[in-house]
Length: 91
Ligand code: SF4
Image 1 (tube, rainbow, N blue to C red):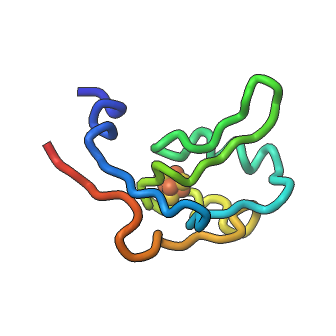
Image 2 (cartoon, rainbow, N blue to C red; image 1 turned 90 degrees about the vertical axis):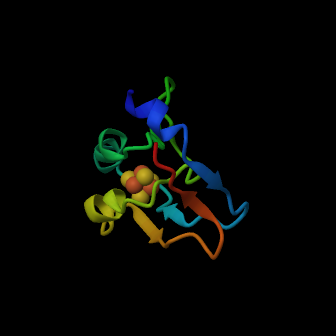
């Protein structure tokens, strides 16, 4: 089973309007690119027109982005509030 299929079984509860991860206004492209490559959920994207896209919904709460770029472009990193966030399922 490939990783996308595996990730497909996890459930996400999105806390609309309260993203648990926020980036600085104009992220450095090289820093951002690290996250494009490192985020296991593929949430950091560079679009065809060169614009940067990040959506915290679908985050696996692994902490990789904070570890790599916590002092550069990650402005805020928290675990989702209460009942929100990822619920891991195995199988
Ligand atoms: Fe991606 Fe992990 Fe950062 Fe979530 S915590 S955005 S899954 S790198």
